[in-house]
Image (cartoon, rainbow over all chains, first blue to last red; front, side, top):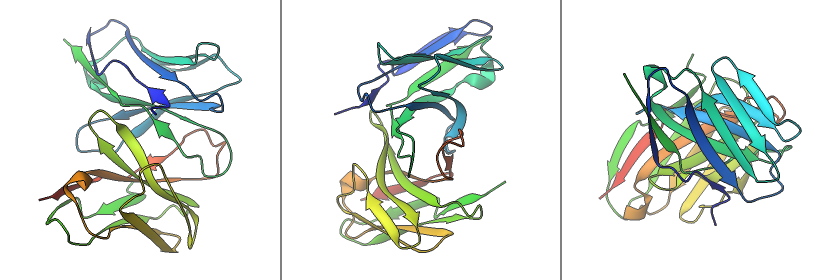
Length: 113
Length: 114
């Protein structure tokens, strides 16, 4: 029972173009969503988050969009850079207490020069 | 800024042997977590702790136990390792929710059970 799903295992984008990573969730109790970036042999690092009271959050080149009715969120990276090549995980939780994050399977993003 | 460290980084062990992985933090965060990462599954929660001696199960806790005798240390034990427990294990820490940044992860322990 995968509550958070990333249906694209991989994505290849040309440098300078926009990268769009997608994530779907099934649990209506989730009210906080996060994106993490992971390089090989390292732990995931926090990238950007969004609360369910918002539908968009921006941080520099990174924007996360949340569509609660569709239970869908997406991460936009523009312009894409070679250093963005990594595995991206979306995660979701209900606020309060231990914040147990539920992660998607991850999407491997490759930025081609 | 190694506020969280995991040891060992790599380990190969035989089926049926006990294994303990250690997570150490210097951030004085209340919450600590153990996840495993497997292809096609992302990261799945094994156990977590919400204070000294306070722990609870995650979604894949069978075959694992944990202990937290000090704020800074969270141990994960495989009582009798099996090949299905070959994985990369990540420890994470967090403050009370609402801070917005989620977890800080360690660098991981790659465990191979042969």
